[in-house]
Length: 61
Image (cartoon, rainbow, N blue to C red; front, side, top):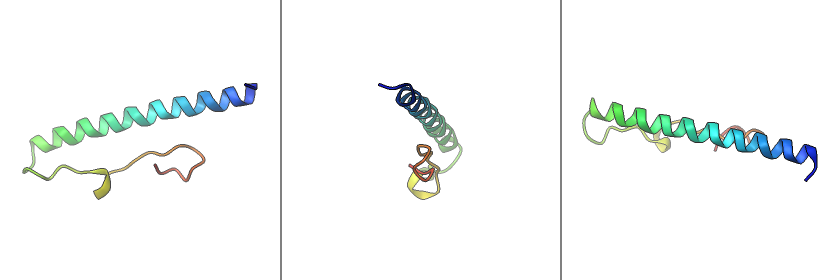
């Protein structure tokens, strides 16, 4: 694996970890909001929630 390929691989892995962390944080926050709202009001990614994509792929997952 060339140095450039290693750098790209490491950046991709780092971005995946950041994205996964934000998604977990979002899910936990949505769960907390759920406790203060009526049942079924939990925001979802399909209905207004945000997803982070990989760099170089349009920015949306």
